Image (cartoon, rainbow, N blue to C red; front, side, top):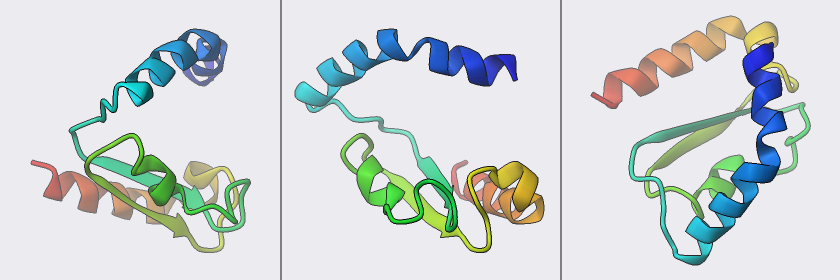
Amino acid sequence: MRAAFDDYRATHEDVAVDEEDFRAQRKLTMPVLALWGAGGLAANTDIATVWESYTENVDGRAIPDCGHFIPEEAPETLVSELREFWSQSR
């Protein structure tokens, strides 16, 4: 939990760096996996398309029958997605 809260706590610092990178058209070069719950907060947003502005190589999809908390709501699906992603990212 601490790591998740620390991520939110650092948002004000990260935003400035992220905006500078975006203006300079710097993108992540490593593969990025973007997953979201089809019934969660981002249900009406194609998160993979959003990430295309920030990375050169994004693979993403909505997890069906899942809300915001993918690890708790669809752990088997998450493990499968991660294994597939990692097997292709070597």
